[in-house]
Picture 1: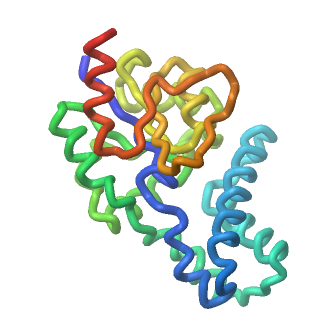
Picture 2: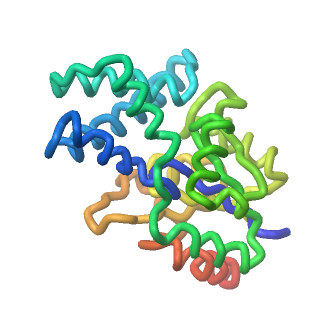
Length: 228
């Protein structure tokens, strides 16, 4: 059976800190810190909603997190300013290694899917804007399950939708919680360690492979299957 790759989108393929340029005119040199807090709250709110079984889609989590961050930094935004910042999330750039990394994965014969907390419509728009949509066989969104990663049900949902089995299915993500969630659900996983300062959660569950760039991904996965 062909190897199937499930690429996380936000933070793995798409640089969520690309919104910093839009933030700079509002918060100046605090834009990076503001962006980081916004991203952390966005994920926290998705975790909490998943645990509470009180689902709202990822766009709502993003908007709520922006409201929180605005209050935390004591920076008031008009309704129009908020809309501009939220719309910036639909045109975020891909990381520099993404297109070549996807091309190498496709050349290796891997089946490539996007697998995201974002809605299918939002993710398809992001991938199209970044010029990488054609690399994917499809988009699988947790929105179809009304829950969020790392709920094990959403990884099982991916396998069903992609027609894959765990031993030949890989989650590719820069988010340790996502990697741990996938491995706990029977998939293999590649952690994309984009920063030398990134720390993997010390849970006793390690990534199947770790790469610093998507340029190394196809070779690492092929080697792993050759050795297993």
